Amino acid sequence: MDEKYNFETLLSLIQSRRSRQPAVYDSRKIDTETLRTLFECARFAPTHKKTQPWNFKVFTGAAKDSLAQEVMRAFQEYMPAEKFSEAKQQEFGKKVEKSAAVALIILDAHPDLLPEWEEIAALGAAVQNLWLACTTKGIGSYWSSPGFIKNLSGFLKLQENQRCLGIFYMGYSEVELPVWDRKPVEDFVEIYQ
Image 1 (cartoon, rainbow, N blue to C red):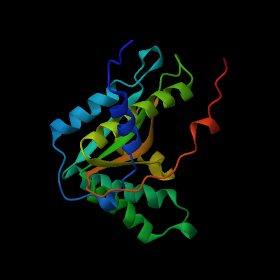
Image 2: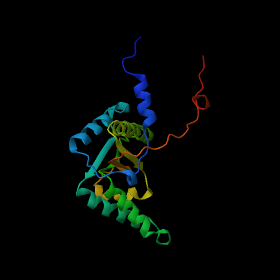
Image 3: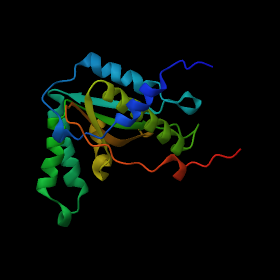
Image 4: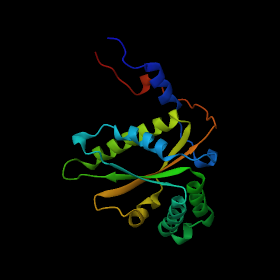
């Protein structure tokens, strides 16, 4: 059977995906149409019982200002006083400000239909699709899951079955990151014949 798609291109794309943090983003904006195209890729992640348990709340432009303030508030609320660092709090706000777009990754669970782990796996696949799509557009991206995200529920107006599982930072970046070694396939795959 002939290959319908080019495997080498797919493999190269997967191998090129990197976590690029906001510190390496430049000042270019991501327009709304590009964002919609990126999230179109997320939409086609595998999902058991077709629950599509993902929801993304995306902040750009001036909306990032309120998100940055909420992130800093949530950080302060989450951290015990003896561990609180104003510098770390400011760092989280700066990550939002430096990004062209920030997506809050929301699990929209269906506990009556599926175990939560299956919904989280589907959400992870949607984020991976989004990450790969960003890679094709030269957009750096980074999934962060700090403990304080649970304190964003009120700000995000989440429903009872919803939970924020991460912050996905996005911004154009020309910075090339090194390829780090992965263990060989033989170390984690056993094929029985």
